[in-house]
Length: 434
Image (cartoon, rainbow, N blue to C red; front, top):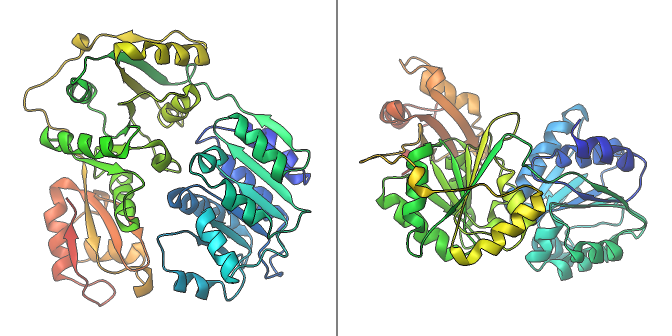
């Protein structure tokens, strides 16, 4: 078990409220998922647990993890309710109460006010990434939601950082919670940290030099503003990098597509804001770059903790101006480790360098509603063709669309197979994503 599981599970199983601080990737979702399922009454078709998340991406990730654990519990209904999706389809799914609901505060409150969701039999509330929900202004929604549920319940509050507001909301929604804090510093792990001082107007050139020198297969770049994300993405494309952005202004379809491309290695660089990056489930992330330093050292640690997981080596690089030295010092003090400040002149750059992603994503105009499974797409690509299955990567199936990653050198061949052939005896439109 991970530390948060070892320390938190006894509290969960004992029925006590829990106030826990744990970084991304700590295993907290499995911890509270086991807790929810342990006391679930599968024959009682009422909503027994609610998990609130700040973003749709995190809600989807949490739902998938709980479903994975719940395979051993027959007939468990888990429903995800988030904005950006039609209300009608969600209302239809709520005609029979789910056992567990995972969702964002705005959409959950909307269903409660509409009368399509009922918490009279709820026994467990989970506030996941509570610090980000407070940052996003969800406190009022959360309090309105808790007013609609029984006072006698177990409330579990998880937060990556521990601002004073967390204690405040805990006092309003919890009863004598047991506090658990898991170490959040990364300086003793497999993450190499480096800080580079840059001049005004030279940040993008510095980032390009870093990418050329290290050539990471996947890089998550953090910016503090949405417009900075967009501007930087345009600049990186001009330098030959396959980059994409993730922030709050994107429509749900575009957000899903960006996440699919980055997760299946069809895009080399993802540029994101802190809030948008919450809940990202990216395996083996090679590097994290702080294009802009965050004012909060805790958030800095949370950012860089996305690399160097599962025993893998990771790289965390931060760019700063001379006037931001105080932020570098604050990070060093928080981590109780001196900042490793390196010189940009030590980087090896290459002329006409291109960091091409190894995969290409193919879009298919058919999904779960068309009874398409991953095996059907794999079969269509490999059956009676000379395309080896080992060249096919991650397959993602949505309600009405699907994505399949294929190695870049066979992308045209795979697209022709899908365009000219059939999946489960039916023809579907397909195209390669940029």
